[in-house]
Length: 212
Image (cartoon, rainbow, N blue to C red; front, side):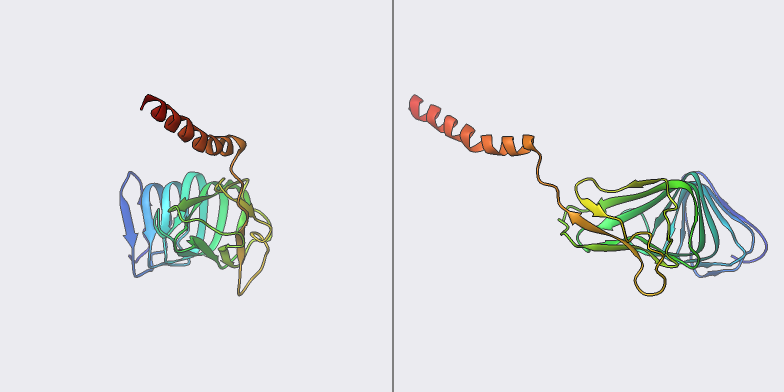
């Protein structure tokens, strides 16, 4: 797409932008899914107030996240990296998928550190493969934020997470990451039920023997 026009996406459609898009008008996502797998020009600001912005391309303008908008790099259920010049968080959700089999996670490459505001950073597990203590998952690369631009972190509850290096302000190689700090032990109720299983089997066998 080229020219001075704007792009607006609403409803429930999925639109994919591939190749080099040079239009300089604004891009507005209020519904549906916009996948940027190519590139957007530096003059095209992107506003996400509803629907989902995804893809694995490059957005050379500013992306602002609002209201109930969602940014999910690649596509929902898969992992990949979306490159963004700058990010303004004024609500909405940065939603990341963590593939437990491949041990990969969605990530953002930032040319400039994001502006603080409000919003949620949410991580969802894809698959049932177990993670191990010490597993690292890089979420931010490039210009990593030095402070938390989100008001809420929503992490999978079946693991204990170390987030001290998530907003480390590190630029260049490496980046901001989370890691698995611990794997919680089963609760007392589950342990109790597990302990009762052999006893129940013994009682059942005794009853069958008595009837015989």
